[in-house]
Image (cartoon, rainbow, N blue to C red; front, side, top):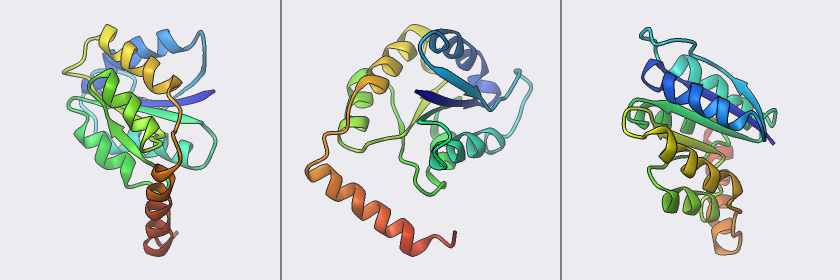
Length: 149
């Protein structure tokens, strides 16, 4: 599995911890940022989400201080279903019910151990399909009819 990862300055330290953790099991493509100097999260979140939407990466993980900004950014990209997850149960449900393809984390509110637990659950949970597929299909239909590209 190939994973796109990105953060802003507030998520940088957590991103670096996650990269170290994931690199032994997965291919990780880092979209930045590369330090703690203040940056604008859209510059890093959009390319990571686009990489997933275009099928270059299988999944994405994006991180900012609260996770809210990166959630907004990632969900602007056609084909992305980004979920801001703060515990394992929510991470599992985001995959099982929503087939989330981008995980969003709050760099200021999650310690590395908790983030790794959330990531492990999110990466191994499978989409339940069934009635949930019908809902995903409605989202995709909306995107097709409302996005220009």
